[in-house]
Image: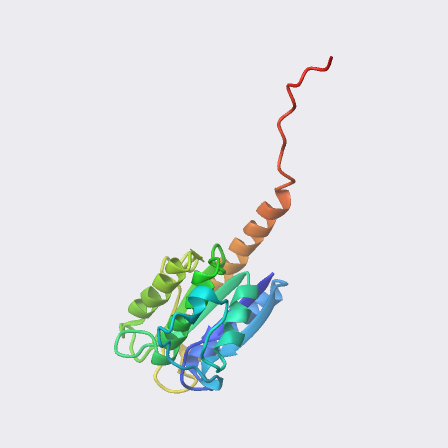
Length: 211
């Protein structure tokens, strides 16, 4: 099974990326395939509401977004992280969310995939839960199965960091990140077990009487 992680920060060396990589590393150790996508490395244009994706499975804008959408479609689970900008997700991540419309319009490509969210901010109560909420709302609109973290009873991985690398000093926050990773792993294993137990559809015995 495959887990795709998206770092929604504008910075390549972001604390957000560290959080996403931490989740992916835990998933990799659990035997899952992983892929990291850093939006700081990608060209992402704005959705122009051109409606191209109403009649085509694609996008009229030629940039790096389609490769991201393809990775999302192939994933069994998607974890998305963002820094906190004025109490919400980064503009780069917002633009990506808008551009995922083709996935919804063309057969709900992300439906039933596992989704989890991570957020970091400059203070302990810096709006990270609003960031998590933004990400969860997008996932719910895509009909994904949203999971939070485990035992710490929060909504996902939430850290406090201001300067590059600060997140590594936030032991409390990193625990929620680790617990989110475990929740993803457990949910995927449950999903796989359920799928393997499902045999071919049963057919009702015929009540046709021979002559």
